[in-house]
Image (cartoon, rainbow, N blue to C red):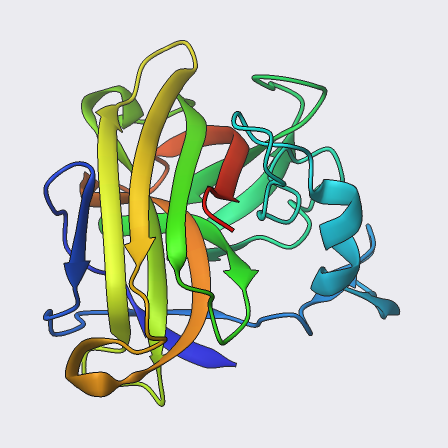
Length: 230
């Protein structure tokens, strides 16, 4: 597994070279992430990479959606299959924006929490990526908070800040689903990051970056990341 850092809230629709000292870490396995059944048993033959062909519904531009289970229609029992959480829980929900399923993400702590998924394994191709998601307040004080859509590419090997590039855009939660994004995220040509660092993996996640309390919850659905210029 790779340890990665949660960045602080940045200017909406921004892409920055990482320069932040990580205050906390989020751990995501990559393509070897196991899928579990309702009892919690690992289905050894199925991994996150198996979800990609079925989950790659087209994004708004017609390009394939790179997010595994971004529409949550492949949820297994109570699990948001393929997704993980930092300082929170992820649970399948039938309160969907589109289709039949979404993911409920709830905080276990005060401060910051998130839910996300690996998108691409290293090396991430250079190009312009666009991300969107739909979010909705679902409990606690979520109506007073903001949802932040994050896209990032790690450095390989990790630098002290662990990230090469990180882009964010935000929207306040509401009682109905709201779109967060589009977030335009550019991975520069040359296949290298700041200080000539090699590029690692890409992930995307939706976070509450400050002010959360235990029991604050939100729903996320129809998460899309597509590459425009391939």
